[in-house]
Image 1 (cartoon, rainbow, N blue to C red):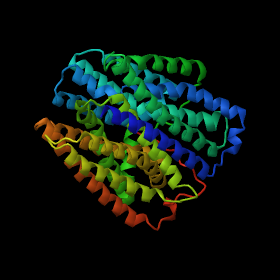
Image 2 (cartoon, rainbow, N blue to C red):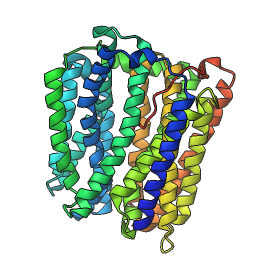
Image 3 (tube, helix red, strand yellow):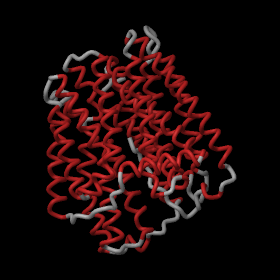
Image 4 (tube, rainbow, N blue to C red):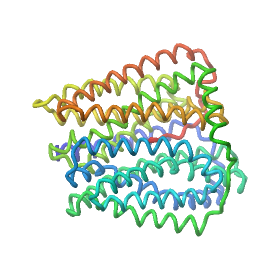
Length: 452
């Protein structure tokens, strides 16, 4: 597996480069004026300079989070409980993050995110179980602030303060998505270098991330102005979201797809390390391979929806769910106790990540078209509840049985869950196949990238 992981990473990087080149040459860009505007490019650069260190810090611990808990000699069931606490914190933070950001201010919310994540990482240096649980809770609360605070700050400054055209926004977020994939790949290799090549252990990537968060805080304090959004009440937001779900069956089906698909992805994030680590797999390199596969999927989405091929997001959503179902079916056989086939499991994981690169931009497009903007926050809060409930219960059930058979049973359960998601996709497709509003115009560009 050692050589396989490196060869796969090199091959996926080459594939991503080819797909990205093809996607860039196939799309019709409405932002040529943006590229020649020095004020816009300077503003964009200042945003990237503060945002990219945060993204790097957020990705650094990804390859070695589970390994760190194993290093501290915790049992699989104890590790599962830590993850479930993180899921619960993410749900709660999702409910309060929008009102908090509106009242506190987006710039202060960006600073708060960095401080919470730094606290999360520093807590990982302790071997106390409850301190590590606190770390996971802090990570859950910070995760909902990452994209909502930074990108909403940029959107407000772009339109209100600098008065740049709205059609220039996708140019920035498309760049963010591309660079986020590259940063994730570099973060995996860097984490591998710290933890394994230099022998500093699985906690070292967390330590390395803290200065990056400090750099971001310093740049935000020095260069960014405060701005505020409209703060709607929590009860009103959830009430509006519930009414939207009940009156539109299309939104209800979309929420079912998201809850079923993304809960399986959360379980995959938990399981990939114990499946691959016993077979001498370099975890950081494997993680970078996953991120390269996801980035290739995002580029493939942009290429497929370009004017040249003109596939629709609904078709790509169907394909991504089908790909994950097939991968989970493979995993139920490749993780059989006593008959483990790590190479096949690794390839199945890569296929899941490729599907994620297709899924997230397609789902983002459909959400924007089906859910009114003023109700999106409330609807997304309702979407998150079953998502994390399914993932949390799945992890707890997994560790009620023998570990090896439990892992295989978990993949079987995930395959059934993904089959339900596929049926929901078919139901949604039958309702919207003639809906012109859900077709992507050939001139529209769609920012891509993973939301997990």
